[in-house]
Amino acid sequence: MVRFFMPDKVKITLQPLDKIVEVNPGTPLIDVLHEYGVEFPCGGKGSCGACKVKLVDGNLETSSQEAEKLQKLNYPKNWRLACYCNADSDITLEVSQFEHIILADNSEFHFKPQKGAGIAVDLGTTTIVAQLVDLQSGQIIDSVSDVNPQAKFGADLISRIESCLAGKLDELQKLIREKIGEMVIQMLQKHPVELTNIELVGNTVMQHIFCGLDVQPLSMYPFESPNLGSKTPTPEELGWEIQPEVSIKFHASIGSFVGSDILAGIAATKMARNEAYSILIDLGTNGEIVVGNREKIICASTAAGPAFEGAKISQGMRATTGAVSSIELRGKDLNCHVIGNVKSRGICGSALIDIMAILLEQQKIGMFGEIENGDQEIKITSNVNLTQQDIREFQLAKAAIATGVQLLLNRLQITMDDVEKIYIAGGFGNFLNLKNVIRTGLIEAPEEKIHKLGNTALIGAKMFLFEKETEIQNILDLTTHINLEGDPAFQDIYIEKMMMF
Image (cartoon, rainbow, N blue to C red; front, side, top):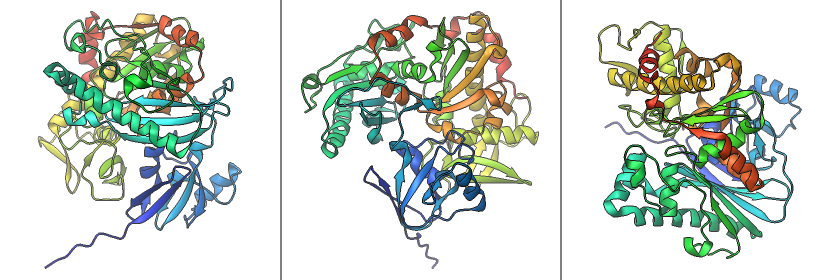
């Protein structure tokens, strides 16, 4: 009889979060820390230095390449760059993300210091992130994240809407209010600060469910809800046992499927303040796209998210333990990175883009997405395959994004040459290989224009803790939501973007 033994786990203690994470020996830190608010703007290539961590206890081996980079950045000897390091033994880390002033667009966010503390909440379809912020210094005191408990009613927004229409709205509302309330109390019990305000952002469906609004208008054409404005429930109405004078605001949605998470994203990119044109692309559930400058901003949603989040891919999954997150071609072999240093269970959106780019380079798929040798699937790892239908789903998703960008550019009567920066938001953005993003035609622009900005919804929500209402209203006044499918050129451009070149 053959017996298999799991390797002993190693413990990673994170300060000041008081979190202990158990992982398999050899697990890359990038697989662990991105779930706790640490951003990897360069995609874990070691080029930006933003993922620094302080080694408080234990040992992290330093390569010559990392040592050279640390020296250039003038970091102390007990600091490491997380993207270079693996956890081979028990370690204690102080996470630098929680020391820094709020960052947006790799520059300091200038704010007027205030008394007390505030909480920023990004309510996502899949996950919820909340951060407690010192309003005097801008420092992040604590950060918590959790799975959206509504997931039992379905992973996507359509399932949640259907559940609400079937009479489950109250239950979905109770679940999400209680979960966020627990997260708020959890942070306040650890840090007894004077809480002044809580700013929530999320997509339009999440806003409607949290606030107990009728979702029926979001279920049928023309998908226009009369309740897109900001809502200000009291702690008592939410059932949260916090000071009754705390101000709570769920910020306004821009359109039927472009919520306040995108409003926050626009704030994070400073799009509404800049003369130069920029683009924000959120590769999440709805695949939202925003184009504009301080004169005018237009936005739309696309049906791209399900493929990039794994929902319509045969072995697709989110960027969690067991997911193939990146793929490189070494010689003739595929080199796959699996999150968590475990056996692969599936593939997430970033690796899906990688494998498509590799197959195009190898000419193993044709311009219509067909597998050239006639097979119906391609082996990626010993137990993860890419099917012909998966390739079709990718084509649909990348065409949706590329078409959306082109149509919004057309509406503003500009071209990509007029755009200064393109920001990629969304949970798996840290893992994206930009060369492969461009090679597949997902984003048709030079690499130097593309910037990963991480969780722009959370960045913007933190900015809203300090922003005046007039500044937020200015973004809303500048921004117009449009329906892409109603554009006469939509069908022709969409078919063109389906092609694989």
